[in-house]
Image 1 (cartoon, rainbow, N blue to C red):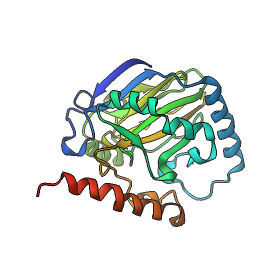
Image 2: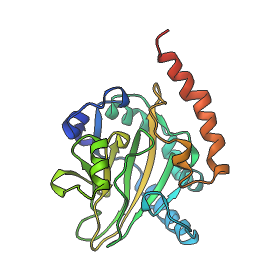
Image 3: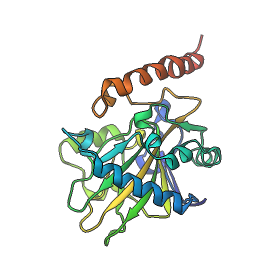
Image 4: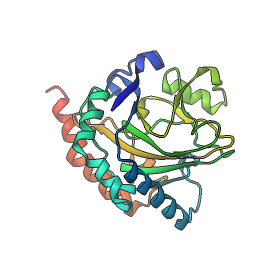
Length: 253
């Protein structure tokens, strides 16, 4: 894995995130070493599932995506739990990472189409996401993730007013053959509008093993995309058995 760029929160937003941040990382770009044939299989199967899946109602953030892909595509499940991968990404993040434990949010595949607003400006629920482009075409070569260069809460207010000029957004290229590790919980971000091309991206969620409570996926947020029977028990189990015990161990007294 060849690191192309690593930027800290201070470098991108002007602040280190304080106790809310899981590490100093804003994002890192790198040449990944995932098997091409396996990624091609993921792409083909994701397209098949998407074609078979009828999306009803308004999806959270307006995103066209599949969820729980680690259970639908065996190749994704293997990537999620690969120990060598977790070690490499932990080194990049500066903190030991673990796969995200809520099954519906552990992994997904995002579909970006020309002329369609890709996703609303937002902060992620999981502390980190790894973005692995599976396919890109068109003049923009898949486009970029756009990150607000400032505090995420300030950016959210400005985005709600329609006041986020391009000059204040950092472009993080999304290219096939490379990947991005993003501490998206600490960054207000969106995606570049594609004018003539498509991108399909595998999204793999992670978090700090030592500080699992640094997670903004409340049950209410998850229910914007998931049915209660698909997520409530897993969320409650994680809070009771991982997040709260880890937080109690960290608190004084």
